[in-house]
Length: 244
Image (cartoon, rainbow, N blue to C red):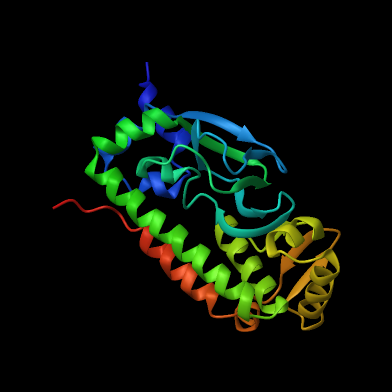
């Protein structure tokens, strides 16, 4: 009879943040996780909500949105298989600061917040992984704030599409005008104009929310430098943990 351990690892190893842990630390964390499925448009948290669970995405995407006056939004981070939702629990936070909306449906691993706090306290490797990842989230938020203030919408849209491409490892994905408008903090007409400009340059095809990136290098040239900064920060966060 086969052991349940390999099957359990197979359930959760699609998350790159978890895979950065050394085997012995990973084994303990895996015992605390449950597989779940999240659906597009599902709101996993609102600002001020108590954090009851944290999520480690496999093939789903979660948009982190700052909310002003209950209706105006701006995406300040995007979480895919490279990261997790709820990392601030390990830093002592008990409530969320952002709205977390599922951008793409898929699977994830979920853990109770109290279990993460306990695991974090006893695991130097997990402490290092989450410290690096929270730093990455901060870099994302800072660069998006700079981007939103100083860069034109066309470049911002190019940056957003490239980050989504990196998270999904695919040139084809679905994003509605409405979702992009919420993420970029603009009206839908602005998204339409920016997408049309990128399409006219032969960089993307965008029809009824279905996006295909035709020229990733060209799209990167059209994007602002914020994309490269966010990308480099994410690569550092995924380096395997080495304990001295």
